[in-house]
Image 1: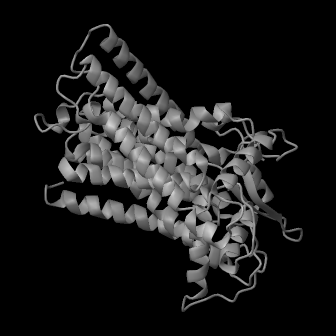
Image 2: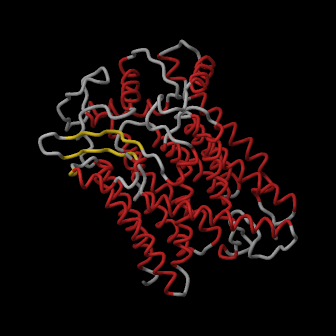
Image 3: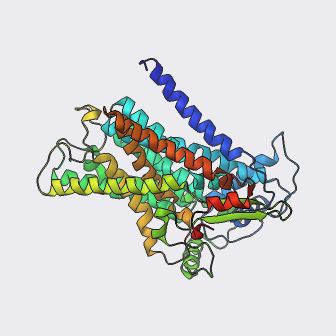
Length: 473
């Protein structure tokens, strides 16, 4: 491949991944003319904003705002379907309350690729960073849970979208200088506040950045870095700035809700929402698809969002909110590999073995080329953010579901893409074939389970062939 061809390949890869994601999310999006799973809440609540019908929801309002905007736009499109669904309280089409999720979900793989590119520039030169970005975006595009969550009027995809925007803006701020640096950090705070305004667990993205920045500050204080780190020097101010922006954004996003429904007030809503989640139990009596936080790593308990059988033909239509098994299992191994790298690096630092291989560095330096940045910066970032989005669930007593793992899973897949990119650019041909084998295995796994992501008809035998474990049913 020549130098002139590389930029074209880079652009074509991005466009291809986006179009692939877009088509799958909009393909037969209206095939089920009924409210699926939690659409009975979120699509209805979104429509209630438009009709000004009072309701109470235990989550902040931003996700419902976006679905409501989708409903309003869908009703005014020049190519409407015939409205036949009245389950939300108004005569709507499924497209009206689902298309916004599909559109937003199509950008999630690109955002993950953008984060990978920013991280890759800490370690590699441009071609390697581009490989990392493409691999990361492709892996996310090949996941089933993100596909399902993007095809229905649910709000988890909005939480992930804004959380990733905050992460991307933060990484741009780390590498920027002067006024642009603080503009990026302001954007990060605003996006992280928006993530929390969808669901409170959006704060996991904020917590991950706080943990990562704290380690950079500790490194700076201990003088473990061979050259000054701007993040390490400025982190206390960066932390306050981003947190303040996030808090302001969170508060402002409640204003439309309070203008329509002044009572209960802002603080009463926060208290009542917290109390509600404290009262929910965690047994199967609460919901048959409750799952433990530690079981998410191996995807032990997916969720059947919809299950229909045709008694005449014996065909099954199942919308299963489950991830791509090969991707999830390899991702778990990859994040474990990151943990091993980070632990070894920290032991070396604490023991005074400050070899350039193990020093932790953050961002690009104006005094050294990007390919001289030591290895652990990327796995450290991924591990800290993974744990920040996963471990807090261990302290939650309410019924939990597999989709609560979505934010953490992204960092496990970024870890897998990091390994794939590293292997792909090694000189030994065997490592390159290993990278290709990983991507091929993930792709074939996605195709095998695609019918139960999209809810396409299957024979009973074909459906059972995809239910590998009893806990998946």
